[in-house]
Amino acid sequence: MPLGPWLVLALAGLLFLLPPIPPSAPPSPSLRDLLPYPPRQREALVGLHLALKASLHQLLGKEAARAYDRLMRLELKNQRLGKRSAFPDAKAALLAAQRWVEAIGQARRGHRVSLEGLPTAPHHVLPHAREIRTAASALGIPYGVLAAIVDNEQYGGDKALGLSRGVREAADTLAQSLAEAQGHTPLSRTLGLAQMSWEDALKQGDRLRLFGAWDPVRAFPRSEAEARQALEDPYLNLLFTASRLRGYFNALLGLPPKDTRPLEDPWLYYLGPAWHNYPLRAQNLETWEDSFHGFFKGLLYQVVLAGRWHLEGRTLTPLKAWGPGNQDPKPSPLPSLTP
Image (cartoon, rainbow, N blue to C red; front, side):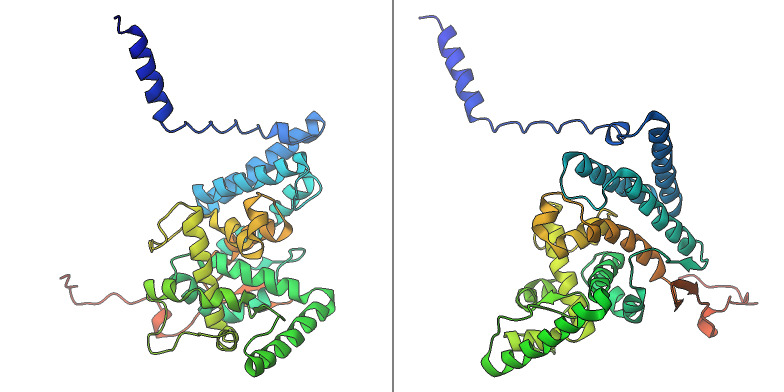
C-alpha cells in the first residue's frame, strides 16, 4: 500500500497538536492617520509631537521618549475609535503634553518650574518626599510612579472647594469607629495619601516580607481595624500601595510573582496611575485624565523628588543644600589609597 495517504494523515495530526500561532498585531496607524485635520494644521501637529518626543529624549532618555509616543498614539487612537480619551481632540492633547514637557525641562535643568495650568497638587506630595522615595525603592519601582498616584488622589480630593475631601474624611472617621466597635464596616474602603483600601492592605504581607520591606518587629495587620489604623500612617499607606503596584507590574510585564528585580521602564508612569485608579479601565486601554496626566506627573516627580524644592503658589524653586556634606571637597595633599 502506498505511504502517501498515511504521510498526509500524520502531517495533519502533527499540525493539529501544535499550539496555534497567535495572530500578528495589526500595523500601528501612522501619526498622520490619527490627526483628522487639514494638511497644513496636521503637519504642524505632527511637528509638535516630534519636537516633544525629541525634547523628552534629550531630557530623560530614549525610553521616556518612546513611552510618551506610545501614550500619545493611544490617546489619539481612542479619540478616533470613540473610546474613553482624556481630551476631545488631538490638538488639546498635544498642547497639554507640551505644557508638561516645558515643566519637566525646567525641573531637569534646575530652573524655577511653573505649574500654572497643570492639574497637579505638589503641596500634598513634597512634604512626603522621603516616605515616597523609601516606599517605592523598597518594592523596586520608580518613585515618580508612587508620587503621581498621591498627586492624583489628593488633587481629586481638593476639587469642589474641598467638599469631596470633607465628605471622605468624615466617612473615614465614622468607618474607623465602626470597625473598632463592630469589627467591620461597609463605609469608606480607601484611606490615606494614596487612597489604599484596607482589604488590599491585608493582602500585601507575603510580598512585603519577600522584598524585606516589612519591619519584622512590627506585627502585620490582621483585621480591618488594624489595617485602617496602619493606613493612617503616611509611610505605611505608601508602602502598601507600592506593594500592590508591584504585584500589578509583575503580572502586566509577564514576570514571576516573586520577581524582585528593580523595574525602570518609563511606561510604568502610565500603568501605575491607570491601574491604581481603575484596573478594568486600564485593561481596556482607555486613557482617562488621571492616567494621561499621571504619566507626565510621574516623569516630573522622578526629577523633582531627586532634589529639594520650595513651593510658592504654583511655582517650584530649587533649593541648594548647605553644610559639610554638600561642599565641594578640597583636594588632599596626601596621595589617595585605593584598596
